[in-house]
Image 1 (cartoon, rainbow, N blue to C red):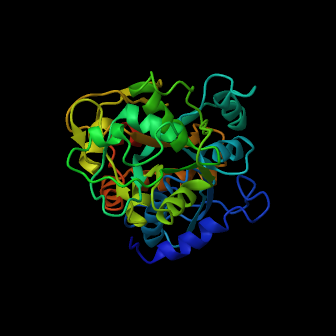
Image 2 (cartoon, rainbow, N blue to C red):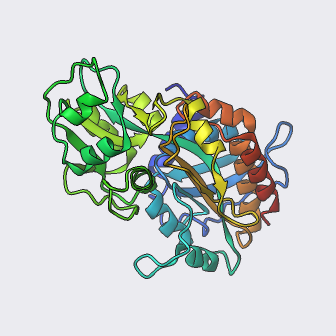
Length: 370
């Protein structure tokens, strides 16, 4: 993947973003412009974000082009995973969080994420703004097999370990004419708390409930395979292991030249593409109120041509309560990220552009941040 000139700088910034102590909202560097970073105006200052590694490549690209227009602005993003990002946001260590699942409104381990975020925002609501649509690929390394179809039940059994070899009759049945080797299946899963993990489980639980019994969460429940940290870790694990399989945001599969399975939910095998994944996002229904724009996805859809395993990365932000200078810079950056031109660029590196109607709602919500 080739990024503009600021990408190299951004990558360094991401890697070291939280090496500084208490870098988040306690950072004394703030934006001092009142415009939105569009052509003819600039903003300045420093923002610190943390969370979803699935959107790392998208943040790198958007931060690069934003930096071209705003050379005095610095966007730090640490891709530690959705769970860690929300915890750091709620602890006031970062200015915004990226999460592949919206803030929980029910208690998990004694904590209600939405309530903790409201407290962090000084008693103001925290909003979930869908900004990056990332198809989840089921990525594999199987030399000689260029096309592979999986359905929900078979995928669930592969990840649970009850299907152990690639030439298992259940896989062969849905791949007629494909010569499948007897290679052992090596499952790689996320060892950190991950929104990608939760979304993959939501898909399996929603489309193959008889096979996948676990309640979806950010923690992988499987008993087989090898855990790796972050999207980079599972991608590299599969890349170096013949017979490997994992679930990972599409751009990582592309970057690592991994095979990507077609998915048959019952309406025919669907190849992953920006268009097929975008159809799933367009069919999502609102699940929040007002400017809290959380979405509900239909993982069990059987509509032909729709790729069903998608995630939406939310930028979790304070509706009010962030330092005024930071707010100016955050709004400018988010406007740039949701801009149609940026969304189109994201499609070129393995993301699905947000539907126009979602972009419009997000833009309105950003304007309402104060």
